[in-house]
Length: 129
Image: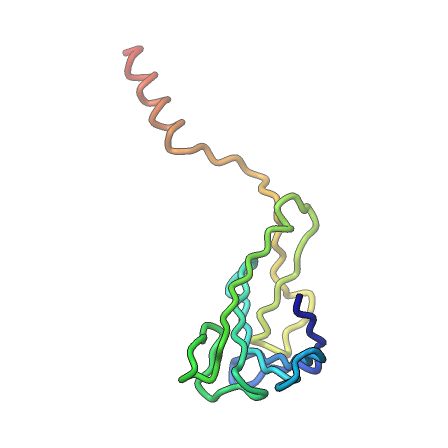
């Protein structure tokens, strides 16, 4: 298991950076990560090959020419049965008032019939006429 400690994080040039410390790595203890939340459930991370992030490294980089050596795609599934509201701030506007956050609810309040049900109902209605 890899256990990383957060050494710092910040946002610069529309990219989110994270510095981690790994005490078990004998060569490079510090790693730079570029991360991005794609939507409410997906997060992309890219780890640098060295202790600093490459200039061309993005959250979807995984090649050495970009200065990265690992790409991770995380998908959160813990909110499937969660009824609590989630405040999601993508960080684009640092002066945004907290009350202006968009609220997302994990559970659906409306029932959407599938295409199969529509076709079944149409066939059923046509058979009666």
